Amino acid sequence: MINKLIDFIKSEKFKKLFKFGCIGVINTLVDYGTFALCHYLFGFDKFISQFLAVVVAATNSYFLNNNITFKKTKQKGFTAYAKFMSVNFVSIGMSLVMMFIFSNLLGLKPIIAKIPISICTILLSFTVYDKLVFTKRK
Image 1: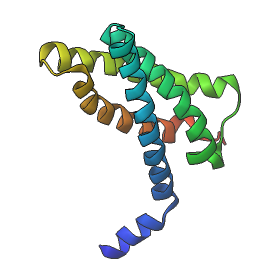
Image 2 (image 1 turned 90 degrees about the horizontal axis):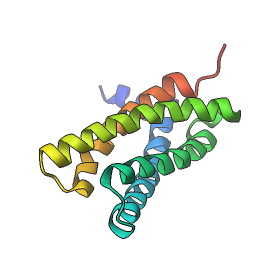
Image 3 (image 1 turned 180 degrees about the horizontal axis):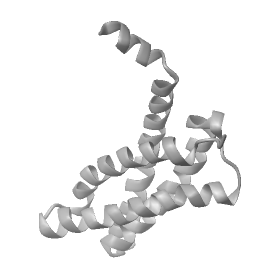
């Protein structure tokens, strides 16, 4: 069991996941910062703020992950960015539905509602990026 754990920690998959996690922390700060600026400082609606926050963070995520996490399978051009962003638009839709559920139905403050939203969207995104977006065609 311990040998399997050590092998996993030494694996490329773990290194990739670790890099993705570190970049995820940066992107989460970008997401929360953008949301807070839009919603609390500029007074935008929470749904518009959520949409803008995800778009800004996703764009940042694309550039960082493409050049660091998935560097070996780096994608180029508008098509790669469009593929990446389509995953994020699904994520945006999911996050908006979850914002409605957690904030409107369950009564959480929008900034607190973003915690479970972020966890769900991060897990979905890594899986899809790794399997579909940052994969070289054979």
